[in-house]
Structures are given as C-alpha cells and as structure tokens.
Amino acid sequence: MMDQLAANAGIHAMISILVELFSIALAWIVIQELKLDAILKRPRSTQARVLQIMLAIVIGHAFAGFILDYWGWSGQLKGIVE
Image (tube, rainbow, N blue to C red):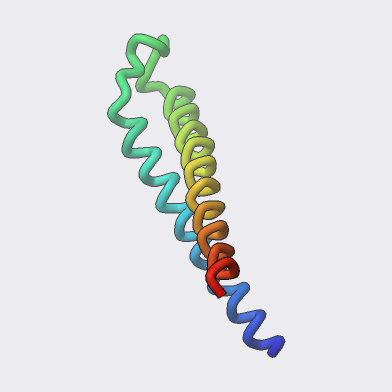
C-alpha cells in the first residue's frame, strides 16, 4: 500500500515537473515574439535577456499552476460520479 502511494506521488511529481518545464519553454517562445525594442533601452543586452528568462519563468509557472490545478480538480470530479 505504501509503495503504491509512493509510486503515485512520484508519478505526480514527474508530471508536474514536465508540465512546469513545458510551460516555461512555451512562455519563452511566446516572449521571443514580443517587440521589446519599444520598452527596453538595450533589448539585446544581458540584462534584457535575464529579464526575458525571468518573465518566461513567472508566466510559465503561473500557466503550469493553472494546468496542474485544473488537472487536480478534474480528477476530483470522479468522486461525484461514483
């Protein structure tokens, strides 16, 4: 019983990590399409790249949180049917 719980927790953790990384990568791709020349003084500087990375992490984390919450909520709906 405990082994099954540990395995389920491990699978959940692995899926969560993959969703986080995918969401951050997706946010990075989307951020690359933004025209940051109008906002930043030097859009190709190291500081601008660090800002883009930080934005990708924040946006990707928020999106992944939504996806994982939705996944958890939809899993809880099984209790209504049974």
